[in-house]
Image 1 (cartoon, rainbow, N blue to C red):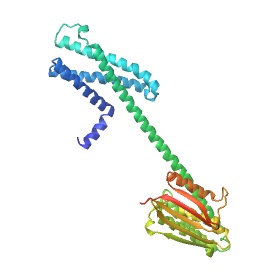
Image 2: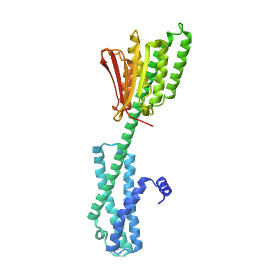
Image 3: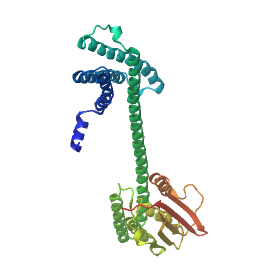
Image 4: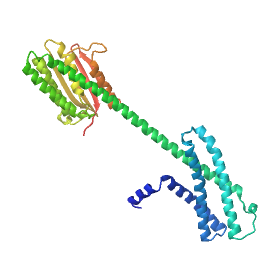
Amino acid sequence: MSESKKIAMNKYIPLYWRCQLLGWGTVSIYWAYIVYERDGYSYFYTFLNYILDMGIGIFLTHIYRSLALKWNWKSLSLKGLFVRIAPSILIMAVIYGLLVNLKWHFYWVFVRETNQLLSESLSYFPVFMTGLRLMAIWVLAYHLYHYYQREIETARQNAELSIIAKQAQLDNLAVQLNPHFLFNSLNSIKSLVIEDPKTARRAIDLLSDILRSSLYEKDATLISIKDELSLVKDYIELEKVRFEERLNMSLLMDDTLENYKVPPLSIQLLVENAIKHGIDKRIHGGSISISIQKRAEQLEIIVQNPGTIIDKGSETGIGVKNLSKRLKLQYNGEASLTLKNENEDQVTATLLIPMHKQ
């Protein structure tokens, strides 16, 4: 069967009816074979018996399905469902036995023209047991299918909710990161407006470039190291307007890593933190070193600056805390950020993230 025909069949014949026709059609083939071989039915009456057997099965199960949908049995607990389907199966089996036996009786009386009484042509108990098995299989298959579908739908909805919640958290953290960066940059420019307007204008141009770059990456969860370092260099140049020779930066990186991905503003935030809590507090300033290397299947990004970590809850600032939360959400715990004193006068921030390249 061609793909277009399959699509057309799926469109015009619902899955329920395809299963009904296939299931009862397959079962009825067996009974058609029995009456043909055992009872000597002609081809015509064998086919008619086949159609009637299919019709009886489809009729009874479709009535059950209609009532189950009307009374919303799919939403019941297993216990509540069991106390309803058990008597339903018995009733369906009884009706099945009656209809099948009546079908046989009419055949023998009106087609074969025998004088059998109804009681003589009945074979009720074996047919009842057959109906009981068939109805039980159908009802259980029907409810198991819908239970499976419900579980899939629940899992899908939970996954969507989890993604939405995680994205909302990431968006919230990103929104907090950008104002944090903007606030510190504007503070740097504010001190220059009166003292050195020309330099202040240059600083505003740099800030404009930085914000423009940030806006272009607003919807991105990851950007290349090359783009992130471009932002960092602009930020350093902006800060050098204020710090002049008191601020220097060195970069050590394998050029083959520049296309790997990192969260936007991640390295920039570590550099900003190094300036705020290290360089800015020293009369003679200092140098910030950035190292980006590959460690197994992770990127190791190290930012070092002179200074000392003081054990205060707010010392690292909201930016670093938010970056830690963002890494945890974005990489499901596979990324980490640590800050520690390497010696008495040096702080090392180490960012480890899984390697992503596009």
